[in-house]
Length: 249
Image (cartoon, rainbow, N blue to C red; front, side, top):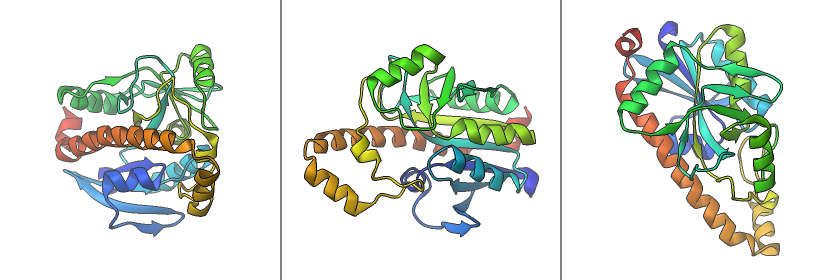
């Protein structure tokens, strides 16, 4: 059974519940997890929490089950021009600005081909994993100029590094939430814990003292829904079509 297992990491509960439902989760070790079936494969999905360290620990946890390969799904911020909310980014390489990981291989070739053949367009290139939320258009532009990355997240590189160390193929699917020109208010992101849960008391107080944030919050919610819709399409496609025969061809 182990050789037919696929691991999937998702950073935030909001992402995981939208993609895989709210029922059937149980705490396995440190992480909320659930098991699904994608055709011939058992899929273990883990909610890692937000950030580099959480991503690495979740990957380590999944690697104990000897997955055939691992996928990281989630949202990302655009660094390159021309990316809109909901656009897919499926990187060829990952960086944390100190190291670089190539994702080329048989698994990537098959999954890229499957997604492309379904008519789903995506941007390739480089994904940057940052230790902090990149909030302003100026910061996004500076990172793009420095690295050439198309988008930025907070997990993929560190999960991929654990897979690289274990010789397990890694695949990342990201959907854009905030575009290059959009600002993410720190007052809103500060209400989110490392595990991805919102402090509702702090959130309510933040909105009461900063009512100008409400239109931005509505915009962020709309962008998040667009990103989740794209990720849902990928998840449905993989669950219906991913088979051992497909990977063997």
